[in-house]
Image (tube, helix red, strand yellow):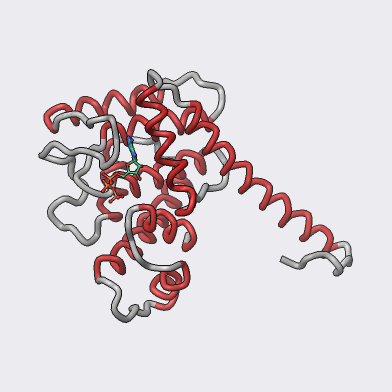
Length: 227
Ligand SMILES: Nc1ncnc2c1ncn2[C@@H]1O[C@H](COP(=O)(O)OP(=O)(O)OP(=O)(O)O)[C@@H](O)[C@H]1O
């Protein structure tokens, strides 16, 4: 959760390091000379992550309410805009795509959710990739679309029994290129599918390694890495 919070917030310009994020979240310590906004974003993301875990446990289906509730926690530093669709047009910096006008948002979000629920694509990675691209294309909120979108991605992966993924700050150029590729290649999601698939594979291999080491330890073979 700390790693995810650090990376997801750093992608959006938060200046906290991984260690600073851990101090704020685990110890409740403030960091000298770092903006209050950065602290609130760390705490907001942590709260939203825990909420996502609750939704996973209860297997709550994706809905407009769930999306707004997650956004409301993410945007803890902005009372006015928390959990409400934007009332003004927005652009995405460096993007070829322009998100829809505000009056279209309720209908476009309803369509997105319905399309996702009825999607017949065989693998969850394909389904969540399509949803993530569609959600970010709509950009329903004035702020927090990137952070909320990555939490929704993990919500859906975890509900299907997969571990959450952690798109890294240092990989942000490739992540952004996936959106550009989608919008310039007739909404072809394959770049995003590859990115999310690779991240998921990395997480699954980590889990396999942990289980293997635990087995070794239980067999009394303490030479293995005791992680
Ligand atoms: N070309 C693109 N087309 C659509 N979405 C994109 C594109 N490039 C990036 N994105 C998505 O938009 C997010 C950033 O958009 P923006 O800077 O408007 O975010 P925001 O609404 O301020 O969200 P946050 O506060 O989480 O940064 C990225 O993290 C990514 O998910």
